[in-house]
Image 1 (spheres, rainbow, N blue to C red):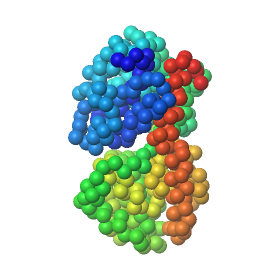
Image 2: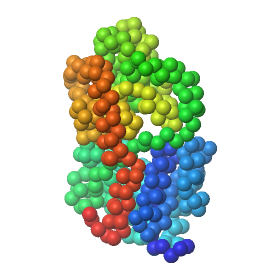
Image 3: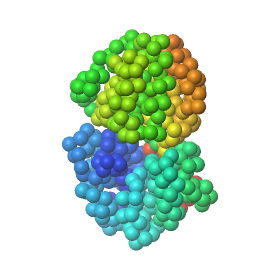
Image 4: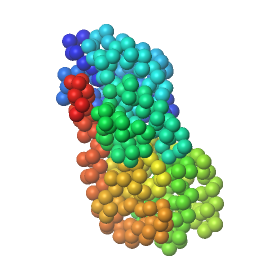
Length: 394
């Protein structure tokens, strides 16, 4: 090795168990920040599934092959990470995985003590369900004993996490934004081909249409039924409104949405393409006018951040990152689920004042570029890493 004492490992695995493009992009941003700001080596660790994907292609272009740690499962992956202790005095690892990752990291932490520094980034803990309190309590107990720092993406997530106040009192927790992406990696023609097959190309290219997008799985707490019922009267008044729900069926079915729209003879203006490949997201967001987020709960809420990254204003509830990300009449508008009338008034305002909507979108992009961009978030992370490696509690 080159004699460096420390190395940083960014472990990224999606809930589905494979590497996603945004995870690869964040890994590369952290690598660049580590090499610019620290005298440390940088590694990425992930599961070696879906290896022909654009995410893997992006990773291979940016990382040296010996800096990519991959394995078929988390057990084998953590064993590869443990081997780094033969070459480095200290290993700092950030991960956003759940119990499947943490349970394998704990024995390594017990073995190497302060030589192994663990940063846990909290993305999901069944927030908003009865299991949330129990699940976050279990994690909090483990974090207090085995983790060096816990990152919450927003104050809302921290407040709803059991024992978070104790984590903060002990100097183990901090609040830092999670990165969105405005990158257009991938083949635009391939993206349009996917969108054409899902019958979205026509509406996305229609300049006269006012296109609203909601990017979330059709789950109960995401409130697609509430949103559909609230939009129908406005859509009857404004014939140019078209609504796109990008997400797979959950507790709510496509047929439930279609039935509501069909009853008002508006089914043709609702689009239900299902879950789309991530690489098609930039094309969608570049061709819509407004994003709506009526969620009851979000641990973070990338569905707020990513539209803003592409210059799309957000009309949303103030939960998750939306609590502070939405600045009324600057980059979007907020509303309460208890007042459908107020929501409808704000939708009409955006539709009837497209110049203001466009200006909000421009402001949203500037705001998101400053707060949520990969490079800025990566630099925050690296400052945190340096603090931990120096035994600071900053």
